Amino acid sequence: EVQLVQSGAEVKKPGESLRISCKGSGYSFTSYWISWVRQMPGKGLEWMGRIDPSDSYTNYSPSFQGHVTISADKSISTAYLQWSSLKASDTAMYYCARVYDSSGPFDYWGQGTLVTVSS
Amino acid sequence: DIQMTQSPSSLSASVGDRVTITCRASQGISNYLAWYQQKPGKVPKLLIYAASTLQSGVPSRFSGSGSGTDFTLTISSLQPEDVATYYCQKYNSALGTFGQGTKVEIK
Image 1 (cartoon, chains in turn brown, green):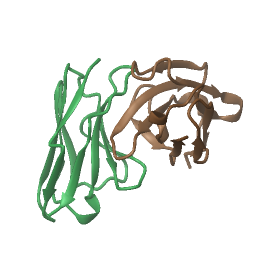
Image 2: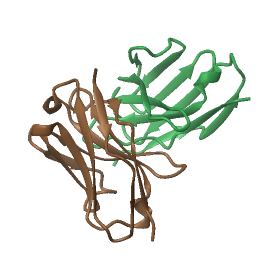
Image 3: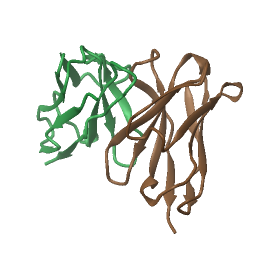
Image 4: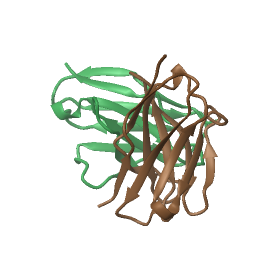
């Protein structure tokens, strides 16, 4: 069974750093890209970027380029999304999703990680 | 960047009604279009890909059509469990842009 299991909810202060994770199982982790999607409270889905776990090649949405870093460790089948300095506006639910057929739709999703940034 | 615009932003319909949601791309994307369903408080779920291919396990009352810039998602007979927000997404390039969503409610 394909599963993407994300790390738990986080509460952080502005200016702090954070890395959240997404562990894949039940399939060949290096055969499928992983994308990250943001959903701010009460808002829609926003594609942030993606990574090819086989070589860690990344693409970013222009809206998120330079604000977050996507990485992966294929030895433990885990992708990451990280911030070096959080802002209150980063408060959101973050989903990872498996990209079908290298550049296709998102066929499996993680359960989401809620990040709350507040002083 | 190619923009994806959905209409309407919300709708209310009766059980059994036929419901249609439209998604328009600012440039042609062939059939590289997916539809997702997100029920309140839940994870998004892939319904349709390649504009018209039903994902495994999705009820046949859902259908998709279109190519190029104009696409539709149709629910042939709305059911109470279809209350959700529906999103289109293009995937013809590295940028997987979503539409802004259409919230479907029962009248």
